[in-house]
Image 1 (spheres, rainbow, N blue to C red):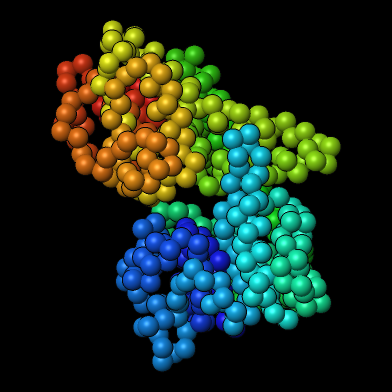
Image 2: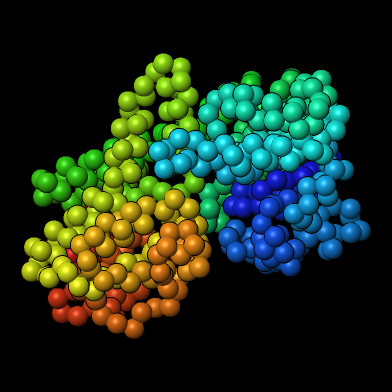
Length: 424
């Protein structure tokens, strides 16, 4: 088995490195800078350490015949007999799914596809998308016939960015195939490297559905927590205290309120919602949860402004330090971060914001959102501190260095044990 991995981001690179320990793997990405960094042993997503990456690069494994090399030339993958596509599946400004990366990846793979090859998709989609959107592109580009000349599998990614405990090989993998024989081949391939084991789904659609509801379930539960936070705020009750009390029951689910961003939870439910609407059903609960979670950035900013007014702080020109802009803690991933919504809403009140995040790349943040950030700890005092992301550095930091006698502290994540004025 010679494997081609298409897309070398948070999902593709860890998967490529894992397979490269046992197989010959060629990674493909359209970003030349990204490919050059990987080939020199650097991963700016920090999912792999330099040592992890260097240990699987082909130049280190020539004797074994396995290992990894990366390229921007799709023709370098023409000797592969298995292709795994791990490109992103975002939504547009109207929350409609964008299949362009998946279509272009399928078209590229089709150009090097041969008889008896297998193409496996890991990108999160709605049930039926692989067969309705991806496979026709493979047929058109390759001139081959599906399930006669080539075969397809689907194995949804379960990468948790920044999580060094639940790495790719330690997360059970759902697998599927377009024929019973293909399904077994795909399952055996993943089982050869996934130590946590595999679950063979009966069809590709079932595997697709299993992935999209994983994140939809979390989205709905977090939306419930966010709604509770709004209610308890009106009642003058600390939401965290309520959740700690309720959590003493064995079957209470441990979710917390907060900003829901990232490449999965804040996006995937829209894929399922679109498919449901196309089939004549309006998914009220799913879309209500999305509305609640998408509105939390603006809600939090309003609570912060109210807090400032309550403490007689002049809003216009107030110096505000926002701690964190990534979508989750201890991770450089800024994709679909909802901290941006909070920042933009605060700026409408003419406050002076400083955004400090030791994890986020300032150039990447500015390119993506037009927002100036810094990796350097500010040498200043502020009127209000907002802990937007619970990076370990922030939780353990001495916040007094940023405070004067009237400084307020708003804890979005509810992680500070003392020194906060208010929290979500």
